Figure 1 (cartoon, rainbow, N blue to C red):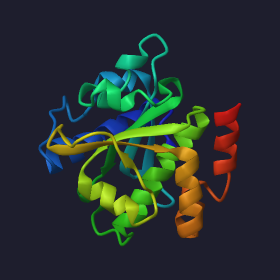
Figure 2: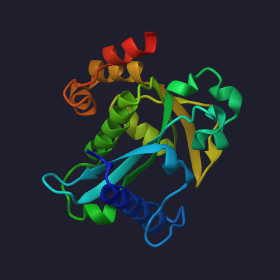
Figure 3: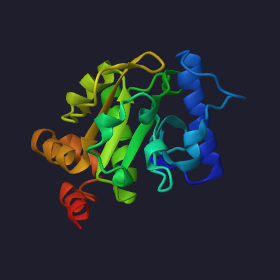
Figure 4: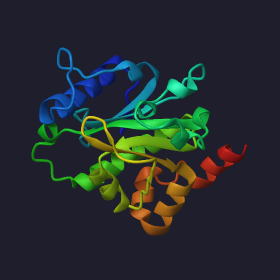
Amino acid sequence: MLPAETPELRHEAYRVRHQVYCVENDFLTGINGLEMDEYDAHSRQMVLCRRGSLDVVGTVRLVLPRPDRLHASFPVQRVCHPDHLAHLPLARTGEGSRFALSKYRLGDSRAPLQLLRVWLMHGIVRMSVEAGHTYILAVMERSLLRLLRMTAVNFIELGPAVEYHGLRQPAYVRIQTMLTQVLEKRVDVWDIMTDGGSYTHEQVLARETA
């Protein structure tokens, strides 16, 4: 996983998103082979590359809170009743979205899809910890939530499922709790998600209680 900090890598992230959301799945419409929206202006992004290359096969972004507009910061706020979000510290929360793996770009790759999903979760956790966040929001297909639970990543539902480019489930997770559970049940997943312990549940808890 690489931070998309250069114009070139951000461009590749938008291209992968177009491939996944506009071509492979007819969810969204893009422009000139790119998929972008208004949330990209206050987001961080990471890209998943083939080992030993800059061939981008996946991407994920973290939408950051807007200090001046906390209650209009995240995509989930468009579809989730405000009461369901009232208990979350929005200033220390980000939303993981555009969780994308391109089947076309993966081609004949032998890497298990579940492992690649774990690497995308690594990206979300890394960006969240670097931003000083304690919670992660998401709007996901229920099937993806189930797949993540197989790796001990347990998002909590926020109200009922909603229509959002198909039926989706708003959800959230406390990062410290998630990393603790993953460490207890799937050390292999924890090792990937924390980059071998470079950032841990204890560090997140220390920030949360500071």
